[in-house]
Length: 499
Ligand code: BES
Ligand code: MN
Ligand code: ZN
Image (cartoon, rainbow, N blue to C red; front, side):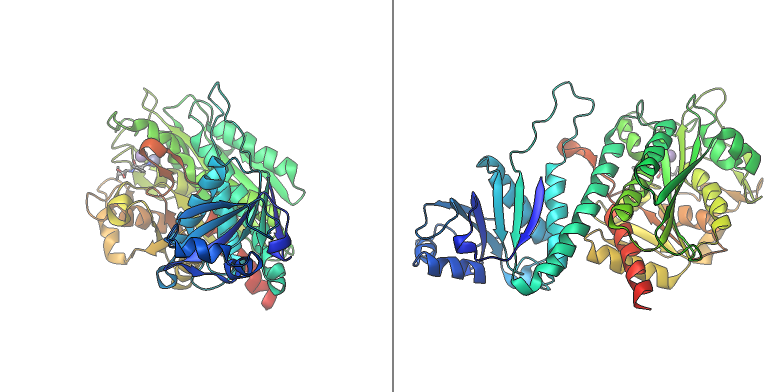
């Protein structure tokens, strides 16, 4: 698939299908108006007959319009201007690509002006359109014997005003990089846990480093982690035959003296719950418990593709959580790399156990900021559902930056508090801290646990348990939190350059 920006006269442009927008109440967008003029009112005539009214996502395919070079013209409903949002944008792009698919179109030119976003930001419109289009083209077939048929669509052109081409080009490039990162994250998430093991993740990281001069990779095996005293991370993998891995991916796009931003992903490649075994129903979905790690991998790909002028270190704490005679038992006390002891009251609260040691490990990088990304708690789904991730942070500035990055990238997050009064819920009679805090405020106590290991730097935690994958008929990884992470890093790079 090739994306391209053009700014030529759309009425004389040769393409298999030209797409123009119709706003609610049969209003023509500027592009539709221009075409209508060229074809002497043929579009207005169709609107007057009421074939299309411009409802969000409505489609009407026209052929043989006089004086128009395009073979077909697709009228696409954009809905009411004041109701336009990222949700309607998604509906519109989804409807458009499903129409193109059913007409078996291979070459399309899309002239939606700046009408799809509420704010008329062409860069952002392109970013989100490309992201949305690519998301629609992703098909999982790695473990199917019949491979997916590739899409017929080969060329996708966006027509924009000539003074907007530069913005649009940027949006297209960044959109493609983010979309590729999301596809990588989705693929890793979707792979079954008998393929996507901690060792598999480390090989993928190695391959990523082989592909870019700007990326280097270091893998710490169990012996290396033992040496560092990472007994908490190691305790999670004890019950499994798969060795745990700490994967460190270094992207150097900035000056050597620039402090790095660190992203740390939970990479539990399967979470049975361990001895605190989960119920059987829906347990297959715990193969997605490495989606935090997958978004680190996808983000590292994307920033290398965009060549962001900053330094970023991606860390993946990978382990498989299994019950066995070697597994950690409820009541066991372990010593973390930080020296703090933990009473493991529930072996199913394992995400925080792998993350805490990784969070201590990253102190050595003297980081500017550290963000961890994890499918950490079922409780976050109760609090925020399946559209919004949760952010918790020891820095108001970082939390706010993440919230606005998520807004911009259509990967929204919302803050929950981690005030000190929650900390006592983690008190233990047998160790410095317990790994669970009881039924109340489950996502907050999980983050409060992590907060004990992140006091030395600016830190934020994204709980993506509700958003990392879809359930039911559409079951599969979503590629979140790649967009918010990329956006945060892009904003950081832009701030740095404007200084
Ligand atoms: N990976 C799960 C969190 C999870 C559960 C994500 C359901 C998505 C859907 C995590 O390791 C876990 O099991 N958390 C427990 C914590 C509890 C034992 C304190 C949970 O949320 O139930
Ligand atoms: Mn668990
Ligand atoms: Zn888990």
